[in-house]
Length: 80
Image 1 (tube, rainbow, N blue to C red):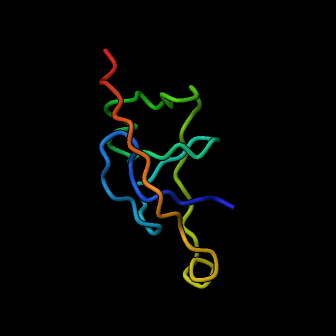
Image 2: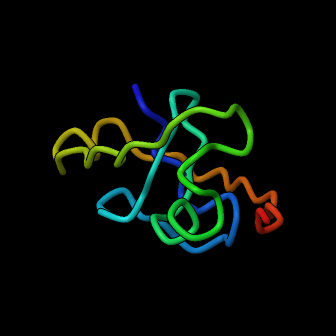
């Protein structure tokens, strides 16, 4: 089950479970769409993997299986 991490690892913007702007790689590194497009060139800085839109967990399932509250923030320098 996905952790649904609460923030972008790069800019630390909140990404609630229902956010359509959350992007994840296969290791669940979590970033916002803006950072993925404009800072990371669509490539995960942690593992080199591709990003996909994070699925939105339905409300009943979210109540039973809540999103993670653990924030990860490791600002990534802008790629040149």
